[in-house]
Length: 400
Image 1 (cartoon, rainbow, N blue to C red):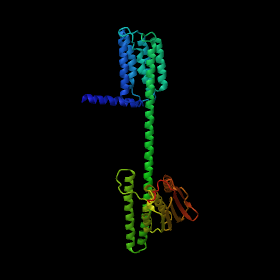
Image 2 (image 1 turned 90 degrees about the horizontal axis):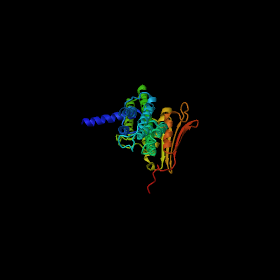
Image 3 (image 1 turned 135 degrees about the horizontal axis):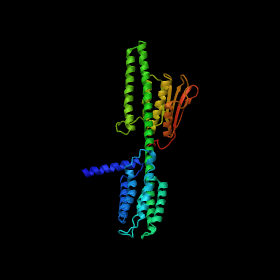
Image 4 (image 1 turned 180 degrees about the vertical axis):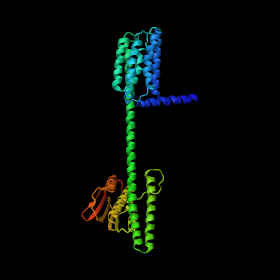
């Protein structure tokens, strides 16, 4: 259990250090690189007989290279320029090591030039292509100067150095691709989240705006009945109807949020084209004069299209009640090859410009999502809203 806990601690420590350097590599990658470096340096040291100076040369190589695990990078510049700590010491230490010939054992395969291979690979990954390439070139110069006469041949050491540089370049490209993919996913998630919030806000805006408009009409009727001393039953009836509208609105809000958030909380279907009649009746019950006509088979309208039509009519009626209370409103809904919704009401008070307010913007967005065309504005005496949805795949085909 203690061994397992120690392993987890080491892994967490290395993972934190790697992340602090903005490196998208697994925690074991630098550990493997460090182990390879220590192994190669150890063999290279043991191949030489001058124990004291050679051990010191090995420490000059290893200690700075391992410093990334322990040196805190609180300064942003240092975090992105760790090469200033280990680039020169490792080059100098390797040159020092190669200046002593390998005579103790296995002299035909000198490990000293190979010391620069894992360091070059790490430099490319950690510091990028420019610094890594410059370090590789400097390593090649050191090998050319101090290891030209090794029994294994200078060509082998150059080849190993190029292999280390190429492997580092491949891992760097993979790391950058992974970082770009994570960024793209994060941006896509942010866009999707924002779009979902906008959609929920639009649904709630339309629902609450209409319900409050109807409720206010009932409350106004109740207030007038009380103020004018009319039959108290009328006031009670108006208040009862306002309470019913409020309860229905709360139930629809819960259902809408449940469906939109995919939480499973909403089991009843959202309103569609067939519910526009109930919408008109709610407005009439609040005292608004609404003339409604419908032609064609509403069941042909797809659920998504029907919800959009319902919300656009809901917002249109809310605007009519809010800006022209008591004025007659005419609504027509026609279904043939496509769908056409028309809402008309007289202008009362200051004229509204097209696109003003979040309600009209929401209506326009819904129409665009339905691949339809929406126009809203006045002709001097009437406020007109026209929605035209051409035939497309969202309109159900008539069943033969």
